[in-house]
Length: 185
Image (cartoon, rainbow, N blue to C red; front, side, top):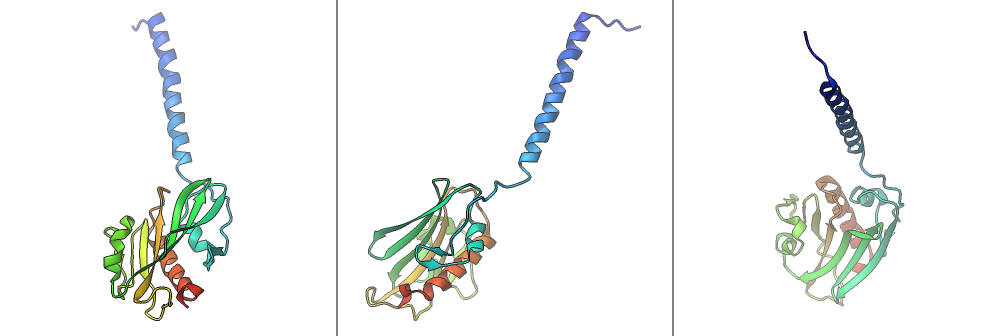
């Protein structure tokens, strides 16, 4: 014969709601992790003067509500197009002139996200899930930068994005777009 007194009733009254709360919290956290944050912004077809497929750019961006861009020229040989989602810097697309004859492998360490990246068969591109560097074609020459080669870099910035496929596609498309732009003439 079991005796169920007030202590037993208080214990049951405490344990049952606690178990329900834990189950509810687990369900809510599982649901909230199923979908990435919505990308409610529109990506323009031209970023800082370079035409690029908005879908390729969007794949390398985190979720958020508003997208803005800003051009930065930190020195005489670099142009950086910075993308901000909800006022936070999340992606940088850069064009930088380097001494002629450098290899992509030699330029890549200047972009830390490429560490342990994958090198393309033609050795023009190196990329990881967070960054990539690409060398433009040898015919990309301008009088302002004699004896230099133009490189393109794509870098995520604390965005939570880690997608080698998205970075590779954006890097190769952006490099081709730069090659076809006035930057190479």
